Image 1 (tube, rainbow, N blue to C red):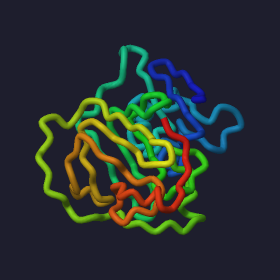
Image 2: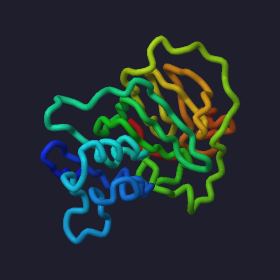
Image 3: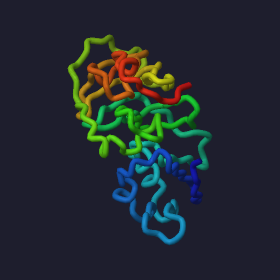
Amino acid sequence: MPRSYEGQEITVSFEPKKCIHSRKCAQNAPDIFNVKADGDWIQPDNGDVHQSINVANLCPSGAITYKLKNQASNPDIKVNTLHMWENGPLALRGNLDITDQQASQNATLCRCGLSRKKPFCDGAHLKGDFQATGDANSIESEPLEQTGGQVHIKPLKDGPLYVTGNLEICAGSGRLIKHTTKTALCRCGKSNNKPFCDGAHKATGFSAEGA
């Protein structure tokens, strides 16, 4: 469960289950996010409110989130994106609705099949020596009529991530690979058509909880 830290203008929350230790919080706002603190390690009032917002927006895993006290909700993201990390997870940023999870705007989802925190990445790809390119050939696709809106992500039992909604799939560099409104993404680590599912999970006996 997330733990919340209240400031005068903003509440910052942290969910350990999602954290992949990218350290962007401590690097970009060390006065607010002090990992060596004796007490609460997040102190929103130790810096400008925009610093907390910036860190939450940069947090690739979505472990750090925020809520402004003078707004009913945080602004929607205008372009939903997925970036493939070289030999690592799928990094999504958008208006994310992941089945059985709290709504978020950032998430790093396992694509090696080894994480113990599925659908989230827990760094298992490093110990498992997972090999997968952060690049792929561009696929001809029609431009999206809208680039925002909700993206629904449903992990299928023993199968892929089923994704619906407006989404730009990108290489790690940011180069566009494909526009999509419906796709299945590999999470067993064995597809020969990464990041897309090719049915390899069936042949390899991949096992994972689903919705």
